[in-house]
Length: 92
Image 1: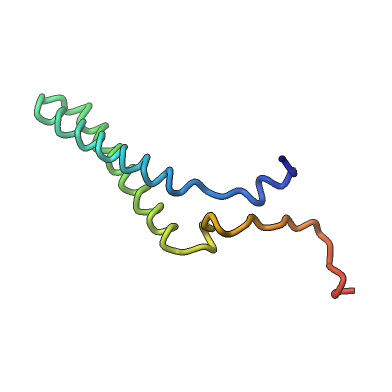
Image 2: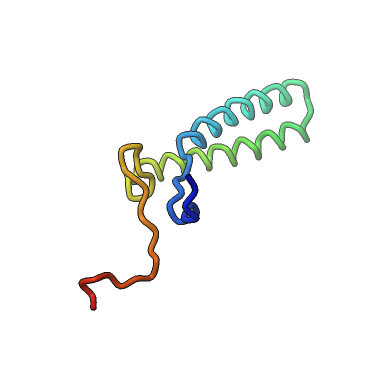
């Protein structure tokens, strides 16, 4: 059921990004090695840049996961209720 509050209650798919960046690191390292061995410097440089990007993303994802549930709630934490701008009954 959609409530309209999805952007404010959305959860980041960090585990999926972790596995995708790991998969990208493996393929970029393989490509870098293969292109260096075959003497294709341009493609090797492109794979090297891609490897740096995927390693950086992997480090950021691991950092965010380690920061805990404030940044990445687990499956047992329900989504937050959106702020509707109301003060609440006690604040009046």
